[in-house]
Picture 1 (cartoon, rainbow, N blue to C red):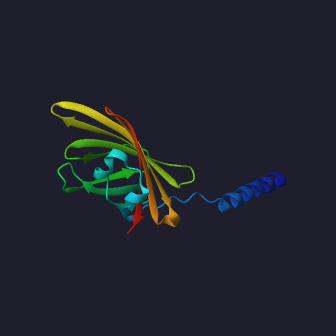
Picture 2: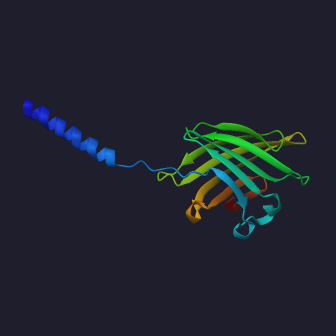
Length: 167
């Protein structure tokens, strides 16, 4: 019986020692203010409507993103959303009264954040949806934020790549 207890204790201690040295992947921290680097971006037909500034506040359980860019009438407009990291859908209002639903998911290494979204627009009594995924990654030793957006709408599928430099 003593051997059994000793053997169990040694096995437990070995497992504890191994796990205490196993590091959980740190997640990238996107917090800060970012400005569009248009020269290093691939924006296509949407360059004039691209987000110019992004302000991010990231916590352990959620990320708050404020994006500022030109509106259809030329004024700057800022949309802010908070997305939780628990896999639940977060809802916000963008572009006046359009409803946006988003979920966030980290890659296993914690370096890339994917935000899947759907936006329901209503115009002239008709509703249409845009769905997509925005992939976030830090580059240039954390001095740049790379965003790739793949979206689908009644007008087709579009991919844009934007680089933002830290202010």
